[in-house]
Length: 167
Image 1 (cartoon, rainbow, N blue to C red):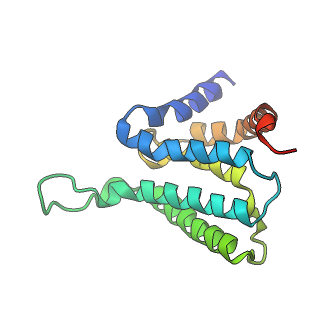
Image 2 (image 1 turned 90 degrees about the vertical axis):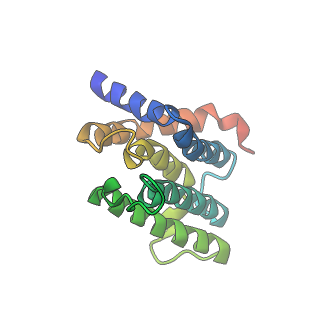
């Protein structure tokens, strides 16, 4: 279990190694704290928060793809994104747009109510952020750590930040 704890700590610490990554991760932490002040139930307001988090993350993950790697006119960094990163990025962007539109239209698509659960969305975006930006490699140990610590993190956030919520 110690190796998963260490992997989880690496996931949380890795985005704070460089200023460019900090600018991408801090809004996600802010969104997580903000989501703790809102309803625990999925609604259209939380869907807008989820949409923002997903779109913000997807744009941050696409940045290396469009970043020039040398002098003016240099080739785009096409090899910067592995197929798994590209799949996750475009899936997150698509879900983000659907969540944002659902929140604005005040109507979820069929079987799309899960898009209103912003707490889990923010946890997921924060933990996969270092994998997506290349601060850590995609590896099973990190995926397992994300899954293993999802419930404990939710419990700590739910009960630890309960005073922030309107009851």
